[in-house]
Length: 106
Image (cartoon, rainbow, N blue to C red):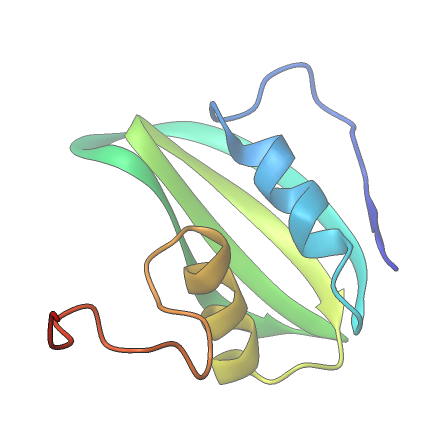
C-alpha cells in the first residue's frame, strides 16, 4: 500500500480522496500532488491523465474547472495500467468482466 504526500494547502476539489484510493492499489508506492495553476479551458468534472514518464513512475495532470495540477506517482506500473486504473477510479471505464448495460430484458 502506498502513501499520499500532503504538502500543499490547496488542491483541486475532489483530488485528494481519489489519490488516496489510488495509493491503496498494490504497486503504487508514493503519490505526490504538486504545482497547481490556472488554464484557459474548462473541465466540468475531475479528469486525470498520464502525462509523461519520470524516474520510477509517471507524471499525471489533473484538471477540474479552470485549474490544473501536476501529480507525481512512483510505481512500477506501465502507462496503460496506470491510466486504466485512473479511468476506473473516476468511473470512466467499466471494471473488468462487467456485463454490457444494454443486455436483454426479461
